[in-house]
Length: 312
Image 1 (cartoon, rainbow, N blue to C red):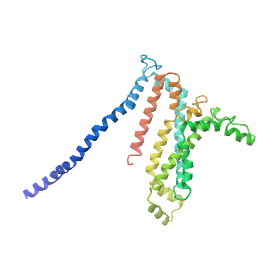
Image 2 (image 1 turned 45 degrees about the vertical axis):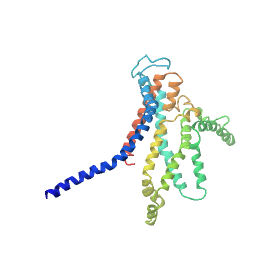
Image 3 (image 1 turned 90 degrees about the horizontal axis):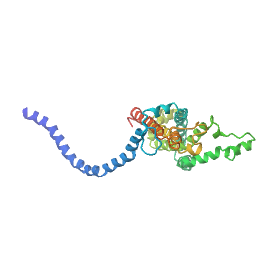
Image 4 (image 1 turned 120 degrees about the vertical axis):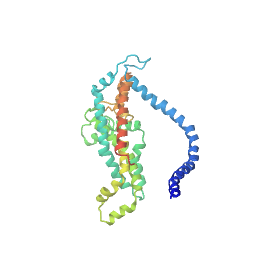
């Protein structure tokens, strides 16, 4: 009895030690790879990411025009000025509005088109290409194209108004309408990206589950609502994440389209940083905008991942 119990107690421990010995060559094989590739990656990440973020946080505590070394310490004064600036508050509102439109219009449109274009029939690839083409187009080029389309003198809107015999609308010159014109361009530009994500997700679904729902008598809407949409959960969560983060960083398309005008009505946080921080040489104020934008993005990204994507 004593020998048997000793053997039983020692056996698992000996097996664990032998397993560790079996795994040790692989661990030793990964060590040179880590030593060779990890330090350069950490060095580049520190130089191009960590250090600029630290410098931005430091500059945000100074009133500085970019020349020489910052020496006029103002503490949190830049942040106080920032949140009292009506143009920055408009930029915050616009970013929130872009997120709402992306979630309520852009992603549902992408899902609807993906369900029609996920089937494998002749000619469907052409339609996928047509809808995805705006996303391939450079943001600056898209902004310039739509600026011409909205032009009230020589653009497409002017031609349509002349054909109908109505007064030409100057959409981009109207501070109440300009932001809605920008939102339309954003939906047109980026819905194709989300559509391709959903097409990939739909094509990876188990067809037997959908066939079983049809056999049980589910209608098209019931099959989509109770089978397809839950199975697309991980793709939907990823699409929402991209839409939110991309909406906070919108810049390239707005600058050639409206430049943040008229009367700062189409500013976003990034365009505000450029227009008020870079072009006006208020580096401290611009750095404060960068810090606020960084904190919002990091908080949203980590919170979203922890709450909604923890199982993906």
